[in-house]
Image (cartoon, rainbow, N blue to C red; front, side, top):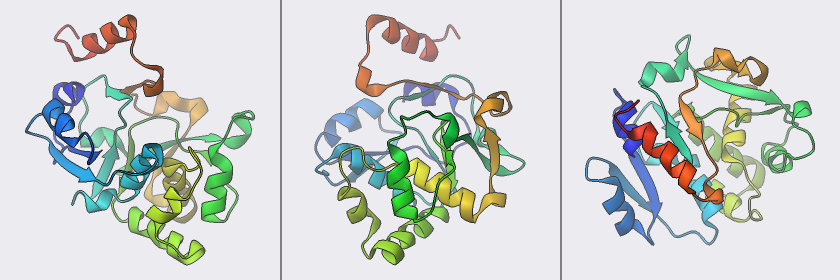
Length: 219
């Protein structure tokens, strides 16, 4: 939140979604100017936080929704035009063939969408999508699998779903001209707005100092 307060301007609102357990502590941490939304306590919180993103249009009336995970930190001034290129949300893609063998998200994404996937769409945060895309993806769950999307995701094995790859692949297949696409090997064309860390790795003294500098007045 400190990085958002320092670097982000012009956004309609900031919404933090948290499970019911621990929500009081989250409220104290984020401050009163941020809108807190409480979601259920899912049996698997990794899958649960993906569910909340796939229902993001239920938490805000914004036409464009910019997702920032807990391990993503803004590092420069950012306003809504930075999320667009040519008036369209930009997304960075990398060919699946360039990923090597470690691509655990691929089979689950293809299984959900029912088609081969040629790209990984989780290459550069933040991830921005128009609100009309979310109900389309939820409708796919009912049409292809006969159950609501939240139930589908929560039936997956641990780490067995990839919300941003599902959103990105559906956007690329069905609404390609509504987005601007960058290839990972030409990343200099896409804005670098965030630092991207690994939340499960913890925070050592060096990383803590780096994060403190990002939100300090020294930059």
